[in-house]
Length: 439
Ligand SMILES: NC(=O)c1ccc[n+]([C@@H]2O[C@H](COP(=O)([O-])OP(=O)(O)OC[C@H]3O[C@@H](n4cnc5c(N)ncnc54)[C@H](O)[C@@H]3O)[C@@H](O)[C@H]2O)c1
Image (cartoon, rainbow, N blue to C red):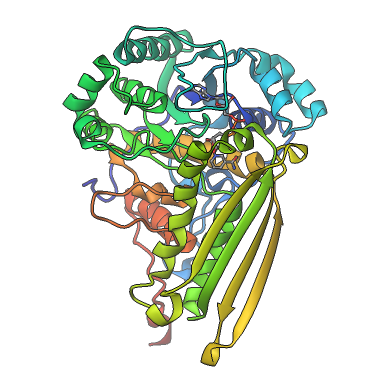
């Protein structure tokens, strides 16, 4: 375990950010950072940029910004690279994604044009709705991993990166169960790479390449990817932090805000029906039932873990939870979600809550990508390795140590994150007890 008040290496030099997939989330993140660097936008939604942390007693008045409390890389020190199956540079990809206005993109065009995607490791068997030409070829998956390792090292040298971080922002792959014979150990996984095992999806090949190069890796999508024993073993062995899965934005974010509140007041739940329409490429990919299943699994478990039906059978023993995603092109990235929540109170009297969230998917996701980049880089400089459960705050389906259930309650997740930062800096953890003020 990392010691309290560990010595943290300074974030000097360039931090390379490698994004797998140059789609809506990646381009909104990159263009956003560039706009913020130029002073034409604010990093709204980013804990690392705008968040504060209380230290010591309430009476001490010590509440620094998180970025002043822990040594994080500066936005000016970030440099971006990406892989995609389409050849569009970041400017064209951002225009295609249709999230940010053309006028803003025109201002950023020269910088965005410089980011040209490297050839991807891709196989249609894992994302059925896409077909692109900017892809690598190789006899085995192991050879493809070697090519990615070469890309990473070339990028590192070309941009003189002091450190790197990789984030999977690629499309959602088909649903896969962990297979012990391939995913159970690093040896088995490497054998699988050499034998072209169908249980190894492209996202796993990227994660493997990152970890081989000692590059921290996070998974913004719900695919298994790095959440298998073989890659957790490699992360441990190579001292690399990892995190995932599936960014917590939109409807699930609201669910993990509201459900803890209902449970806190011991209000019962008989049903939660969530449906939404979205029209971006992510929506198109999720229109395929096999990719949708991966997303559905990631979204569904949230309520079970938060409400703990086994502890509260009278309140949560028998609720219906349905999640629907509908691909509806006219909406583009501007998703609309509806939630109908059937609850009950005193003596079982029923009530309803209706939520209509007109959100912007990638606007919610971009600050999370930024925070993950900066916190994973911090974790590596602190000597933290393997699963970073303190980053659960960012995910719909947080990775945990084997045998632990994931913590989904947003407020517990935030407390865990901030207490981890306090611990790293040697500050007292905050319990919110406060009895001492009344002695
Ligand atoms: N709020 C959000 O937008 C949000 C929230 C949670 C999770 N996610 C997940 O993040 C991912 C990205 O979302 P998006 O809206 O940017 O989607 P997108 O379709 O706009 O972008 C994904 C990009 O990945 C590329 N890609 C697919 N497979 C690839 C591979 N093997 N190698 C390289 N590139 C590959 C695609 O060509 C595409 O350009 C999706 O899996 C999505 O489910 C998004």
